[in-house]
Image 1 (cartoon, rainbow, N blue to C red):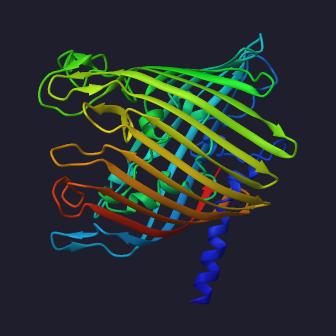
Image 2: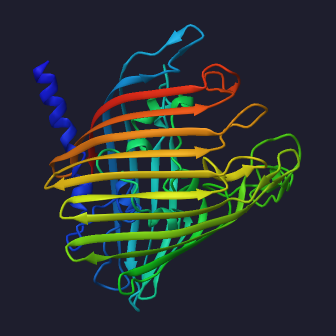
Image 3: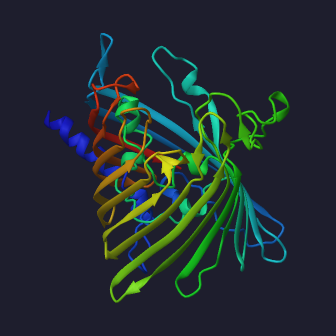
Length: 431
């Protein structure tokens, strides 16, 4: 047992290395606290431009995680089944792209994020299929940066105070939350999920002026990777990204014409580093004759204060959305979400904790109230060698909604409350 605990402790230390390595010495801010996407996937970590104009630099990178989870949730049984408490898993991602410099000094390039699909019991192929998650081109110069394609929006790139930097992402992780029963997992309402970066858009990022910069983004529809053939369905069908109205009983709603604007200040008050953001997202929606909804709008703000390796802060958003940035059904409850956290980095170590809550509508129906969720994330990472880190993560979450049965996914008076708890230890390899 002692050997196992020693090995587990050593393993947990490795995953912290990358966020620590990305720490900004001037302000003491840690990567991730200010929304640096490189801790979620190297969407901005393309190499610097070549020194000679007319030449390009190609790169091919990868990421492999292996982890062990111990935990469970209140929905982890039903219909005569029950899951075990211990689970081993892994996932892999590939990142490839290029960057070059034109004769006039303009930098340009493109990158692709390739992910592994999840497997299942007895599956020999599902986990070996690949999907694109980000397909982005960009131009960078003295006037700022222009991105286009399936990419992170301005709010996601500038996201501040969500404290996903001390383990493998907390409740926004690819690892531990996916091992709970689906209806026991709390929603992650912030702007760094695939609901935001998995759509095609154009993004402008300004240069910095005296500590201030801003970002703008436009997304015509919620379509994802690849060109959609509208000829295979009626123009007004749900599968056509140009649809403005959907007929029939389908309850799904889709946003359209999303505008994303965010401003950021990064500086210092004496020895204390400061990063603060304020942003607005607004959109129309695809009308559904059987499920009326309102246009989604969100106001979001974040703040992080840091001194040396210590950082504290949080993020707050509110708007007429339902869980993620989707239209709120008519008569539904407006959403309010917040997170507060702290972390401490010292050399190759980083530890931290975050506490978040979300109040929103969730499911709707006669006798169904609003949904309330709380989550806790505690963990740490240690970079024990270049390109590899061990991480330890503890998660606890609970959900409550009067009149909704989380076990059946339907209205009901039973199972109106859920809880999930687990511990994960893993190792990441990055190259």
